[in-house]
Amino acid sequence: MNETSGSGLPKTFSHTSSNVGWVNTQWVGDSKQASLSVSAHQKSRQKKIIISDGEGSLPPVVLQSGFEYDDKIEWNHIFDRIQDDQQKAVKFALMKNLHLYVKLTKLDCCFGNECWCFTSNGLCTVGQDEVMVVLQRLPGEINIPRDIFKLFTQVYDSASKGSTFDDLGHIIFPEQILGSSDHRGFLFVRPTFQCLSKLTVPNTPYLVAILIHKWEVPWAKVFPLRLMLRMGAECRYYPCALVSVRHRKPVYFEIGQTIMSVLADLRNYQFTIPVIPGLVVHMEEKKTCVNIPRNRYDKVMKVLNSNNVEHVLALGSNFSTEADSHLVCMQKEEGDYQTQAINIENTTRRGELYPNTLIDVYYVFVMPDFYMYTSPHFQ
Image (cartoon, rainbow, N blue to C red; front, side):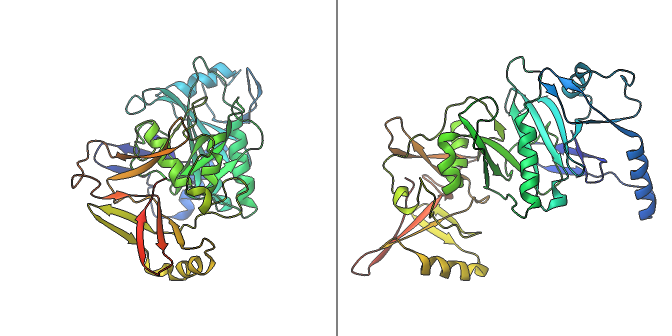
């Protein structure tokens, strides 16, 4: 699997079940000028062509000179290159500083289906982490889903105006995307334990955008960690799958009877559960540990002073890579909620129940008689 560096030069990514390693391209000599001249030479050998598929014109395709079909390049030639495992990803020029690498690959190592892999190169020029989208291919699909281009250009435009996207951030589209009114946006996650084999991975740091359903938008806005873990439980993948699936059923429906409707505004989004960066909550046998970084004292005090729910302090936690399992909030068809645990495959838990389990929200109840007790809640 190949990855392109910021200079447009390939970087090899190797993945095994036990470790991950990068093998970087190295230049002969220690002169910076030599590297720049080689890069300039590569650019001079590139050319951009305008091509159309069955749905109309595409962004310019950037090809190296000497391409096999230089005389007359058609979409079927480009598509053959996109789905050929022996060829590198095809590069599209969305903007002057933004390129998009496109590849079709069968993820038989983990997912089992053929997927489009879209990888950005150039978002870093506007202060945005690079973004990758892994989209399951529909049967017989030979045209690139157009709305993917819209996603990357909107991320670029937003970042250029100073509004960047981070881990568990989201982008919402007011209209339908990817051929369905049920598709409404993307949730950005940072990969942790997921398999990256056969994917064209961007330069780090990077995010993966996952397609979300219109019924999942409130959770993406108010409590994205809960949504991420729930999507992972749905496909039995820890902590969540990186593949976006079109026309799937939502993991949450109409907001039912939940304490979350008291602690957060799930309709107008005027207030939400505060999340302190770095805070994690671990359950280990009968012990619950709330770990807060020392440098977050000011944020904790701000939450305490601005809390407007009487007798209750709610804190949202972050994803923990130290936990071997997570408790997930599941919504039943009747509308009420239950809790289920998901864990890393082939990992033995250290204990009988939830030995080192992370929960997504933590409540502190202060009773009228000033007796305080804590309780992890999942619904």
